[in-house]
Image (cartoon, rainbow, N blue to C red; front, side, top):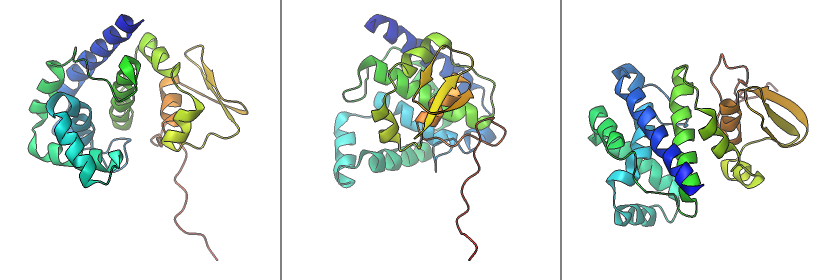
Length: 208
């Protein structure tokens, strides 16, 4: 199974590098589904393990008081400023087989990382890219209630039912959609307007 997952990781990185190589400058600078990040920051983040030493990450973590998300945000913004889009694409292309895995995540964690952030880009840009079902199923099978808590998603009383894959998650009122968009819901992403699963942002104020 490990070799199967590593092959899926390499295939996903290869596909994403090819897709990114054909984006326009406007698309690179467009918002992604990662709040506060453009497409370029997302790619800078996914390419980080291939360019940066563990010492850099540790130092940035110390600067952020141990808050990984805070450190990751700062590194992504800095790298997106200093690296060109060609640099980022080249980094992905030459590292499709890189053995990096997230702490405690193993190869399945690496696949999840790449697939989810790839969707942050393609879904936000409205690109008609479907993650191959074999890769998507490996990621979905790793989703647990703990994943929901980690991402801060509000899925209480909801049962996610994929319309293109034999997969369900949770219990309660059915929420049906493409498997890859349901994955984004688990990850706490707000899907763009036009998606069947789009939910308007709550009003920042309430009339008295």
